[in-house]
Length: 149
Image (cartoon, rainbow, N blue to C red; front, side, top):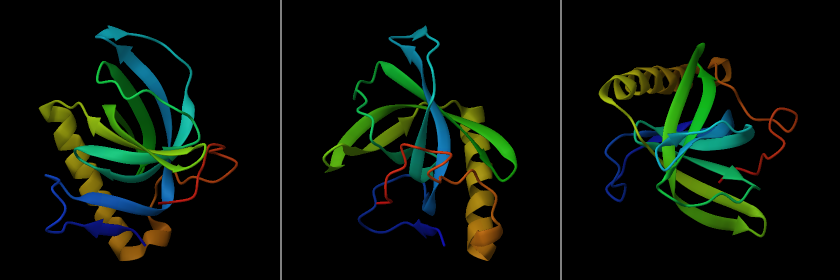
């Protein structure tokens, strides 16, 4: 079951949804230094997501640079959703495995959409997480899948 948390030690503005089985997303570089670019996509496993950002794990080594905007696309609760953000943190879980923190770059309309969909997801996960619809990671879909947290 997902863990929805907010504690005294948690300085986040919004709640986060933690996934027991990570959310599988397609990730690509959207722009560098304000210029739109087209690149290939990689599958990455999102460990948790909130309105302000997400955390994911991967065996791929990405730059921590606020000029690089990444796009994450997934299906949650039957809806396609896109998150745009830049990586603000990278920690090494073990050699060759990294955990990244992404801060979203959102406008008011995107933020409203994210809040609505993440609230719907968190309610669905609390009621019956086995029937909650999201693109979950497995080794076939997400070859870069790394163990959770």
